[in-house]
Length: 255
Length: 333
Image 1 (cartoon, chains in turn brown, purple):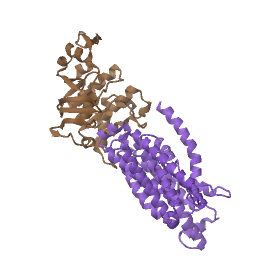
Image 2 (cartoon, each protein chain N blue to C red):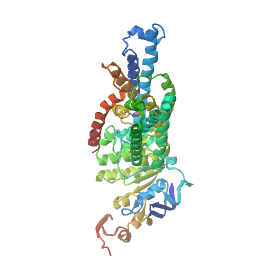
Image 3 (cartoon, rainbow over the protein chains, first blue to last red):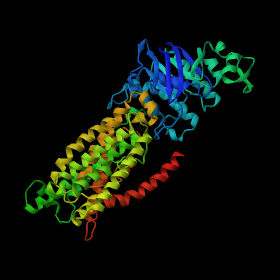
Image 4 (cartoon, rainbow over the protein chains, first blue to last red):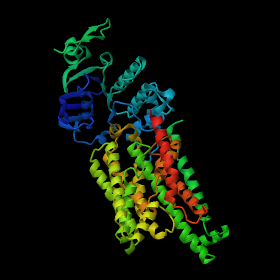
């Protein structure tokens, strides 16, 4: 379980996160939504203590970890940043095995448990078929699934995932959300930043809606994705299709 | 096939090749010694001149070649892993240039004339100083880019100060020494240099090899590496000090020998699955092998003047560097 209490993040003069209190419990899958620049990524980075915390607390399973260094909780919190740069042409399998780094010492080889975790992660993300290909030869979408597998392979109790479905085709957007959902089903606290409101609504147990650094709404997707909230935060009007999914209608005028 | 099946094949192969080449190098040189002469001389028996040539001239030269090449190969691999850039090299972050400046200062101000050990001491001292400045400039949480730019600045400053020392030198004898120093060579080295610089190099190697577990995670970028438990600040210091000690010690005994730290990791990388951690030890062996081979070339090439080793590695290394730039640009698109 991970929790922030009245957390503040300042990037230069800009308050990226303001007074944000969130709590993601064991086995819960929670989505963070909001327009560009709303502070979703900064909040995730604050949970990791990667972003400069200007006030408030980060709690892991009830313990205050606010001032612990980033590397202190590698087995507990796994993080998938945005982007898909990989410095060297490692094979997909070798890249996924990096998720096992927190479980090993310098000269230790991968154990049977490590190999098993890597295989499970490759299966869960539908990447086994190109496990032995170098990641620089994969397409952008294939590579981001491999990177997701790397995070799953950590087998952490908290999973912080930043826009995992960007650049994925529809089929693999669903694969990815299902993989995260199944991680949550095994008792992981999953926090996922999403831009696709319908994926967020369909897969997440709860949503936090962020706007200008603050949490402006939270709760079950049906409540958070209300017409009023979307109009206020995203400045769009929406319609609903027959299964209740959001269809963006048009921009609201500036006034 | 799982990853745990892949062992230390590259390291073992390269180490065997290195031992074989070092052995072969004992039999090659100006003095025409037969195989039996060399073998007897190794045991300390036979013609006194033969014993001297083999034990006091060839052996320290070969050992130093392997140690210097190994240091450069290892430091190159570690720095490339840290900077996540196959074009990085000890010279890129200013270690070689600063060590060279230290040596030049020792020669220019006459410390070297007072005691020969001044050159190694100054070279190591200057490279450590340069690295401390680098860490101070780059700050606690500097990005890789800042580190590279700081290295470039330190390199340029060291080169400028070296030129200044040469410019101001009113003693043509010491100017000649400086120029010869800058060319880089293993000729006429003795156990004195080996024992003086050796311990520094060994400490440096230990620091660099200990980065084996952390470097692979850095392939994913700094944030992801930190989230995987890598203490970035410690890793940076470890590699910077490790490289300063091993490369500073190397430059102290051999002068500036470039490009080994660039070529060795590149040649080995495909054989270790491009893993920057598993690259370290094989790259050290490859660097040692390359330099011992290059030194054999220098010794057996006919000619009035022996070519300087640093000149040969630069002649071979610079075009390789250019090719690598083109190759890297293409493959990263």
